[in-house]
Amino acid sequence: MEHAARLPGVRSVDQPAVSTLVDPQEAPGAATFARLAVELHRAGGIDETVEAVVQFALQAEACAYAGVTLTVRGSREIAAVTDELVTEIYQLQADLGEGPLLTALSEGVTVLVSDVTTETRWPRWAAHLTQYRVQSSLHVPMWVSEQLIGVLSLFNLEPNGFSQDDEAIAHILARHASIAVASARAGETMLAAVDARKLVGQAMGILMERFAVDDDGAFEILKRYSQQNNIKLRDVAQELVGTRRLRGTSSV
Image 1 (spheres, rainbow, N blue to C red):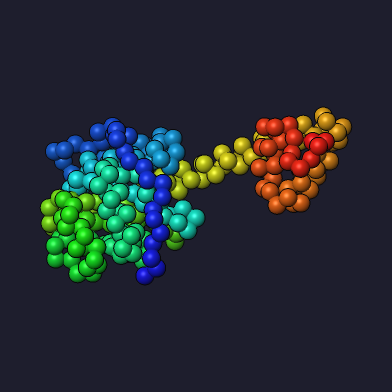
Image 2 (spheres, one colour; image 1 turned 135 degrees about the vertical axis):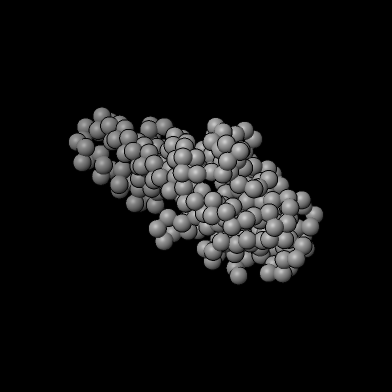
């Protein structure tokens, strides 16, 4: 297995991001997940989305801690945890290059650790984990179409802490989380594209006024500078709008 790099972007959840969606006296059903879907739809972005997911997991599942790890342009990022203990467990696997989370991420399979003390698949990880309170864990991949975008991880303080029903609920939650994260990413990409178009438009306006050129001429100036200096067009526009000049030029 390829050795995992240190996991960046750690985000710890201190306050619940969602309202109490689960009645503690009854198992989560269709109505509960419908309310979750609404909460995820209302989330303002990826950070808020994954926070809502881990908080819901604490309410709906037999777990003491929860976390979400996302794949971001080929790297792995700890997107949300309900306790810093989860971050330490994640980082332990990255340091050792083995563990259930890494297997779930690399193979796209559900991984259940029923009892850490008897675990033999990742001996170094299991030996180190005895210093923590966690006795069992469940790691469920998050898929969108055929793309693995992350893993939902649940942790229990007792051995054999997850039943078949818990695993089924975890899969439903991971599916909701996958769709919500993909939607949030698409929204952020769209906003970034809109912002880029606005910046380019503002930069073109500056050039049109300064050099008395039309919009085609202004865009050609920006494109030529971008190509000659190997700088993204958006970054060229941002620099011009922010400083009213471009590096290495005296006339712009």
